[in-house]
Amino acid sequence: METVEKMAKLIYYAIDDKLGQDIAVLNVGKVSSLCDYFIIASGSSSRQVKAIADSVEAAMTEIGVEPRGKEGRETQNWILLDYGDIIVHIFDEENRGFYNLEKLWKDAPYVEL
Image (cartoon, rainbow, N blue to C red; front, top):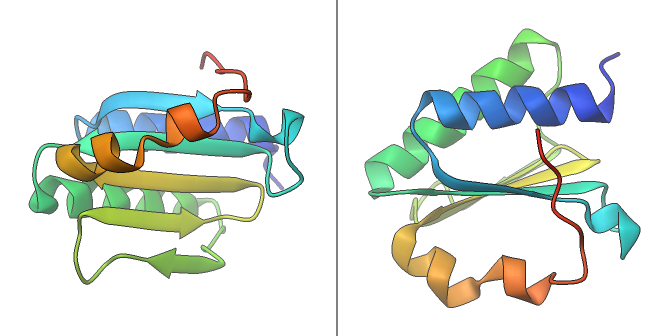
C-alpha cells in the first residue's frame, strides 16, 4: 500500500499534468480528524475541471485506490474526490474564490511537494 505522502504527490502530479492552477496541499490533519490532506486546485473551465478529476482518478486507479466518494461530476464547477486520508477539491475559478477553502482552513499548514 502506498503511503499517504506518496498518494498526495501522485495526485499533485496528476493535477499538474492537466495544467491545474494554484495547487494547494493543506495538512488538515494538524487541525482536524477529518483527513490528513486537502489538495485544492483550479481549472479555467468546466471541461478542464473534469479533465483534472479524470486524471486524478486514473492515476489513483493505477495504484489500486478508488475514491470512497465523488461529488460534483454533474455541474463540474467543484468536483470533490474523497480518498479517505486525502480529499481532493477541484474548482472552476469562480467557485474557488467563492468558497475560499484555504481561508476557511487557514490554521492548516501548507505542504510543499
